[in-house]
Length: 549
Image (cartoon, rainbow, N blue to C red; front, side, top):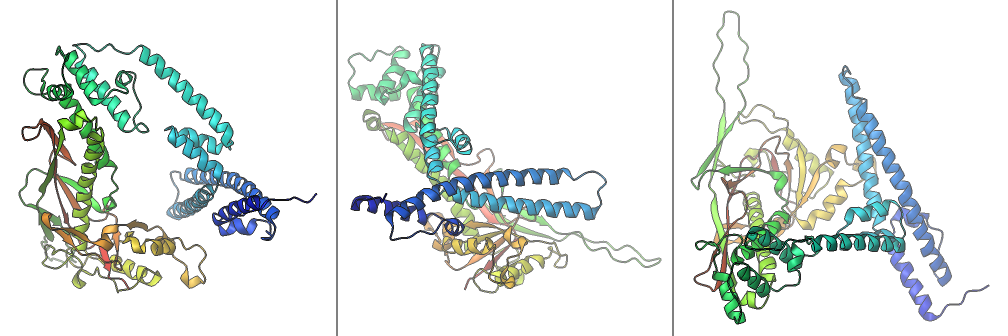
């Protein structure tokens, strides 16, 4: 029987088919049956066929991946005491080869999963319920979407029931439970600011839905202060100034509770901020703000031949040094009485989070400025200098230029200028404009000809893409200024080999530090955000620059 379709139906099927085909890999497209673009029915059938193809491919790939993991574990188990070096080398090479296959297979699996509407929907539903692991379990079980919806609803209902039972047995906060009350308020407000990431506790449910003013009233009443007849303005002012201990504010007072919320969101944002420089730095602490001098011990002197009746000669260690100092950076955040009256919770979550992100950005600016500004080193030469042997021939990322960089690393010597220290690049550092080209170079699997093949040693180099490399850094008020280049790129080794950049914090104050007080200049709470930090590039031998094509 001939199928008939309306113009709208045909248009819909065409759209679906185009979207489905746009997400296919070249291998998946080649495996599909031939599609006649003049037949709307054929397009519809092709979409369905493609859906079944992806599902079958996913199952096959997962089985192959599990098999590869099993084989890798079995290969590792072959290492036993008494094996000679040749046998150990062979096992290691086979083990590395298996893991290369695992990485390649995992990349293909991930790419295919991104095309599977079932997987995308299940992961989205699970993430919205903060149950990512639960979603992954059903992704692997091949659970249909509608079935997963029912399972998820049942699970959330069960959780809600347990939470309700717990809340019915919550604590009746009194005068002796100030810290417990503060913790409950903190939990309720953090949940209100970010429901997906903060789970509401049984105690926190007592304050769910309450405004900041209502919470302030509750704290005052719990401390014996009658709020009957107070206006909103009077209530906010009293909540901000009341001290339960009679002296300084404590963490269970209303200003202390608000400050803790601000501190929590600030530190969380600071910790979560992306910092691409981390693989390149050694972190340390310094006791004060005085100049720090780092001595670099060189290699032991070479052993010389001692002739018969000859004397042993004395030798000395070569050493270098680099100097720098840390500085203090900071700002004051004010949370006013108007914020409390207006019930503006964003002032306690988003604003401090923005300052936490700025603290992390400052660290990134300091570290990358050390590389971009090409500073003068302890020997009087610039970081990247011909005499340092760390400037590659200007060229784009490719087999020849990467080989040139690897050669420079291998020829680096110790501070004595003679001892070969055997460095090798571990990171390819690029501006974002070169990221795609770098990824294409590293991931070459089927080169056009043998001479284009990327050696395994270079494939293991990890890419670090950083926007500051192209845009530069412009903070003249903080003396952090460095020009960028969209063409220049770098190679760096592992800091286990030798230092590159040192990032130092004041001892006892690692990362962002906060203090709070009830403001005198403003009618509210002031939070001071402070970061005592400094950065200095320590060694030129473990990093090389290519000015670019």
